Length: 170
Length: 170
Image (cartoon, rainbow over all chains, first blue to last red; front, side, top):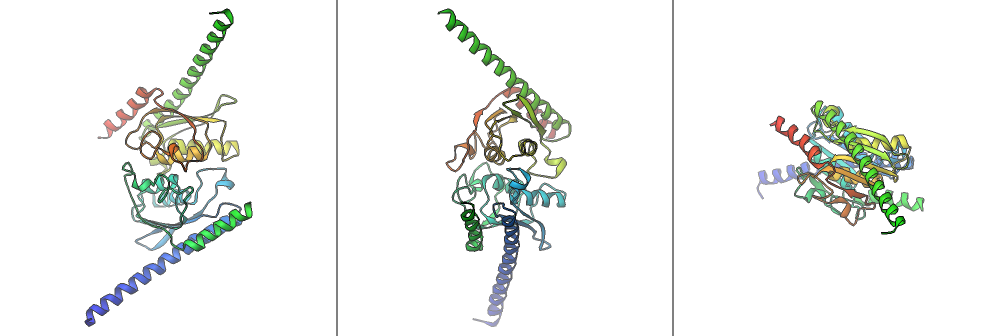
């Protein structure tokens, strides 16, 4: 391998490593939010929305359905509402979402409406998920915006928190 | 036909007529909300939620996605949030929804989460609907609560308002 090729490869690797590190940090921020929900007795799901241009978190939320008596108050819905309010726009095409659980069909549809660029999610949800399970919202021909989706990020840690929560509830 | 049978039949007929009249009134209330949205430059969709026991409207809303910069602010979502807040519960099993347009997949999933008893909707939405079109949310095996659904109530009037709105936009 020539020196330039080597450098390019190394650069690509470091870029990937940096990207992965950033992704991990953002998923860790979402997991912190999930922990907050756990402590409040809510199903522990956390979410952050990141502006891909500034690399900054513009919304960090967790599930508040019990606290607010609101069946729509999933972490992703609250994050989209906060982020779009802050951005002054109902569309967030430069934003990425990190969420600890596969979004349900309600949240997946809202993600599509908000034109979110990428969705990174933690644990898969075979029972109530709407991305890789159930109605697979983004695969519907009537879905007008399909984000890039990366599932299974920090899957074990995200899933473990949910399992512990439901074990305690029983 | 015996006299008692005749009375029973007449009673059933009047009950049905009364029910239809009430339904029409509630759909008219939803249409008034849609008109409000139209005047504010929002896609004209209106919604009311009725407590089936008291027969009273407990939430009346219309689409506010533009005003609030919120892609989740569909009439149905706002109605569910208002009604569940007023009821002090995230579940509304004794409530019926009247909405001028077939709910999208986001709203249909929220309706299921809220355990709404019946959904009466106006115009069908082949492009973005989620009840009789697209992912047909209530027919998914992962849908844990399926309301009774009655589509096409005051369909022409509800659809006409939407058509006029989009014609003006073009």
